[in-house]
Image (cartoon, rainbow over all chains, first blue to last red; front, top):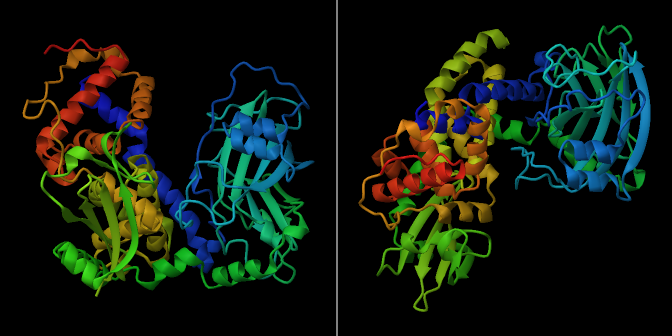
Length: 386
Length: 186
């Protein structure tokens, strides 16, 4: 195999595999649909933004029936030691509630809310992280007859990621369970014949004075209206006894003292209106004019001199860095982590418009100024796009 | 809208646009390791809109994909993170020690077939690649994944071709050294 082919394989492993991205996009895209399409709500509901397979199970492990890891151990097992520490902290709740259905014993081990500690990212978060932290839960799944759960790679396991659903839902009359998106995440691991589901979603503590439940079902990766009944009057979510697969509902013991009715109401109202992303997408999903206008605006600003930008714009931020040698080489290391290599600067240049970007309504221009003392100043200017 | 109806349209659109979207994100994203997630986000949104509105809703599907990609990127970065993204771009290129020298040919025998076929090795290289500077990762994506010639890669990334060659060669040399496969002839 040529080295170029090896590098191509490496880049596929890097995460660029075309088919994998396409499949994941379809899965996630379908999961977003219920935000606005009533007839699809019956079939597809939000699933994890990034569902990642956790470490492979320990092959050959001896199944110790009835012996479960606790939530911190399970979090550790999926490689989330920070969350494991959170589960050992004061705010964690060891629930240890077991329900049985369809030949499986499902145990909600624990629940905790805190900072977002995993690498999961969602476009629904403004700065790459949720505004109010994350609520984590760990669920253990065992076979009722004592036989071990299969390995993660076993495509026949009803609890495989593509065939099972385990997410928090708000049991409130204001919103259908399909109507909102809590940016869920999930990782599974099998240890000693027990499958552990490591779950997370946007902090639900603001709803602590209302009912929040964890729905667990097999038969699909999406919330299933055949598995769960929703009472529009009371908001109650219950398992449908006629459902063929596993369908269970756990009440989450949240601390009512942490409820924030005002924030909860604002959140609910936003989702009643379709949700933040829906609103953004629905506004101009096919509007090409802003796109072209954005390019034109960026081009216009790029052609301006630093002096013209300063005269027309508003200064948003400025930083100055001294030249230094660091792990990226010799250059200017700005306080926020930005780096400009020394070689990137043309000798004799004193200032220039480095780059522009636009969100459609404004253009952000970055002006770099090399000072006489050798330091580099970065100025961020904002100008109207029109 | 039925999934079966829109999936062929989506897959065709994806095939037609995935390279250009990837190139756009590669050029604009400060942390290339985030690109796979961003790609997924972009096309998930496209697919969701497609399911809601149907193919006939798209007057110019490619333009819409570009629009979504831009929106995703803008949303992903706060101003500060965008600053980092912009500054880290090696716009003018660098003249490394080996400027002007042609890149060393990469002989096939550098990497024995038995190991090259090992998926674990590819995974290890991928993990290693993520530790390299962002501009190096961009070069790898453009050159090896998007099959762009070095001259085109340099142009796309705003770097001098000599810089691209130098960085590429040095990184490949490091990778060979790392895996003790450096049997290349000079």
